[in-house]
Length: 455
Image 1 (cartoon, rainbow, N blue to C red):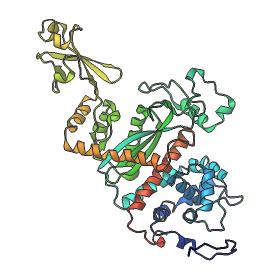
Image 2 (image 1 turned 90 degrees about the horizontal axis):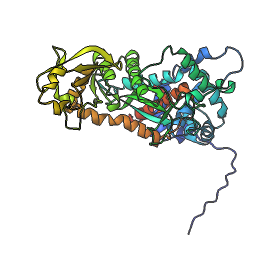
Image 3 (image 1 turned 60 degrees about the vertical axis):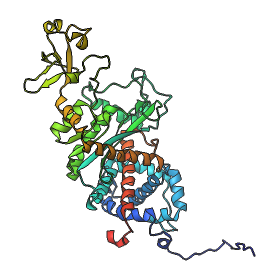
Image 4 (image 1 turned 135 degrees about the horizontal axis):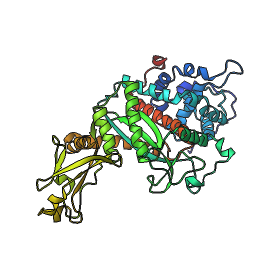
């Protein structure tokens, strides 16, 4: 006999504990152990940013927990997030809300994220607390780091970009946070950086974003999400937001490495990265200033494919400070630096005129010239490492940071920014890194310890 469900859902009272409805192996229950530790001094950090008078505000811990839920499950809209927390028992439990407690209005998030949270640098503080927890669990070795950047689309239309000389900011535009931050940064810049190319197109709504074709091979405005990870367990030890430009992303790596050393006393022995980081200037900083071994392919365009001698065919005499050509003649430099980073070594025209190898060396020039980067010694160090087993291992381990980006976009729905301006993007990136580290910590637990253990 077929059974039928006959039940009246009109009961007024139900008796159950919310705690009993959340399985022990639920992700949020596992994450809660570490979130409790990370938010332990939250109120102390935010106290200077609240008034001593007036009505009590919504507990900031509740809002942070709700944001963690949103970024963990790909709920990017605050309006949608409040609806989900209203309905989902596990979300309510994680946010320390009982069934009768009221969920904050979505507009409350905007007010706090653009105000107190940003002014206090709270999300950076929480991120560092989570990293400290990972270090205490022995998940950060500090021996090898990997760095990479991924482009995420800015909250700006790619159809409304303008050339810099066409922009005429209105009073209304100047009052927006993104434009005000951009103009303030321009005022603080004393002189333009010659290594940083001026933008060809600027977004009127989010001028700090960069016009790029790196993401999805489609031209758009975007930001660079920069991750520095410990390659042992792929813990994100630092995160930085930049415009989606290669120069800014490489410079951000210097910031992250210095900050990681100052904050966590972590200094890696080696750094793995892709060819975008293989410039002479960055490798020189890494080898000479930081004493870090680069496991980075060198960005090199010195090889020729026209049958003539490449630079590698010329021997560098380190003691004499000059090159020696295949015919044994010397190429010297005048010491003039070209382009801010290159020395030119020239052969004597008298030597080249009578050389039997001229047709294979400089058939179209009166004498051969060899450019040498000011940091060529550091580039040579990186080249030698490229032929080692350790480099091949680092190349495989570097994929861990790429997987971080893939999981963020695939599992967390993080492909386009919601906030504008570098400060807003920085907040979003910190939240993303916090959630990814928390998720990694939670999955390392065999079973969640008792809640009172972290009280």
